[in-house]
Image (cartoon, rainbow, N blue to C red; front, side, top):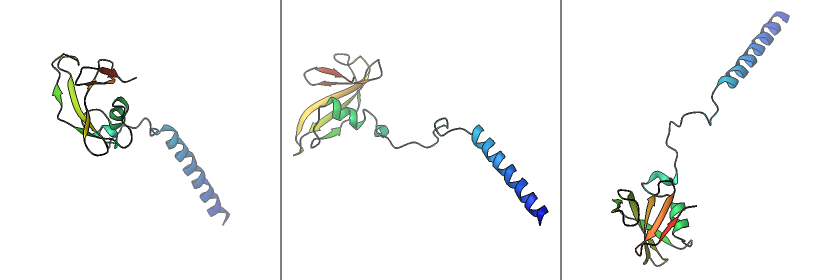
Length: 122
């Protein structure tokens, strides 16, 4: 009986030590490569919803509709930058603002309206 208890104890200690060693040398979740695409606001092409709502100064009742991306002619956004048109609509569904989003050289989003007024993300 003592022999079986001793063997069980040795086996348990070996298992505990090996599991701690494995845990120490395994990669933490933050260092693991992202194998699966996470759901995010940027699953669509263009600016995420949070940026559209922030730069478009939208209230919660307002909605928006994305348009087809186009290349900038260089008048407002830098030449050949991809511009993402967005129609901001009121609660009744009427367009209140036609805005155009583009990503600046600094990697942040910017917006301009039909009048050429530009606002940058901070």
